[in-house]
Image (cartoon, rainbow, N blue to C red; front, side, top):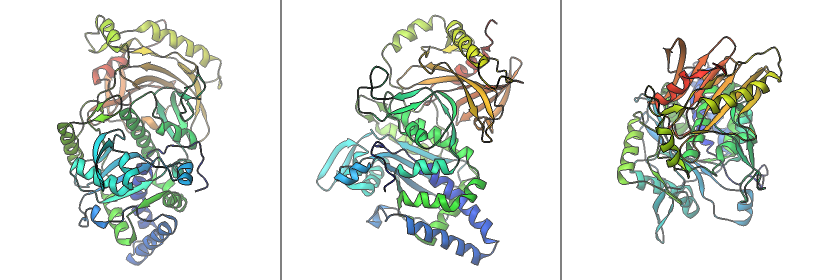
Length: 514
């Protein structure tokens, strides 16, 4: 555990990215290595299991009755835990809370694989040996470890849990770097140096990640996914899901196959799980392979964000469980965004100018054009000089939104692809209603960034061919290509902009002076 650094005090939720891709690729790797014979297949599985058992910790579940039994081939629900254990906590024996609680539902008979993040600040009753304790759900980890966390979630949601995987953040950086880093669409600037006025007066983890589409490696990726200040628990969960969705889409089987031994060791060193032995591994590999053909459905947890807790009614819980078990497409944003001071006044002021064609938008060309001119000047001075990136800005904005102007917004920069080729890029950041809610306008001369792979549909509007990317029934991104580059509008992390707002903003993209 010497790789832990004292300053790194909170883990992200690395489980889904590593576990899911490992399970998915595991069977492919086994089959490819086995040569089609049963003996070779079992030998390869036996070798992988032996490697995992040698490097992994003991099972986090002592009472086998806590986890539900399941017949081979039947759907399974796996709990992924990320603890906020720090090096100093281990030295001093401090209480540790779970930083992340995720449920993964593998059911090949359904059209989608469901993933549900449970807010760490969710107010619940925790049944301990000394009685009921009302606290945030992540307190169950400090009171009784993964075992009590499983019991609490089962009691809360009324669903069986078949396996648990407990991970720490130590392997997250190693896994991201081993996989070649991840291109992520960062919605705004994430910054804190604990030195006012540019930083916070509080003892928060330092971070400096600028806005825009970019390559995130090791520490930056860790800082980004675990950031949780100046937004809400629901926003943080959405940011983690968004990062891991992009990671999953970018990591191919070839990369996993080539690095399978190293990834397995990274996974094992930073994991405790009840999944042991050939039978469990083979059963999960088969289930993961059958489910891998289905897209991932990010089920949002219904709840109300308060000052100290996230609260959920019985109706909220019932709807969340129904959606998770049935993997139906979720409707609307992921929870209700917490309003910021002044939101009501901005909505009232903007409503007078609301666009009739695109409800929920208003004319806001001037501030957007001013920022477009700024980035155009910066891009003109940047290398590579041979690249020309015309700047487009939207003449429409979502009601109640304002353009962000700080040291990194609007941003003009360069980005490198996997081969090292450099491209020009820019990002306009727009603050929307609700704490931690930002949407953005991106442009780049990189014509094939991974984020634009596999659009949900293509649609011609006003003479332009747009590509639309959906998560369930929510429009996450709208892109448009020209001979010089590509452009897109990104929804907020909670995907609070409606489809009409997104389409209106995208169709209003214009050049300065037009």
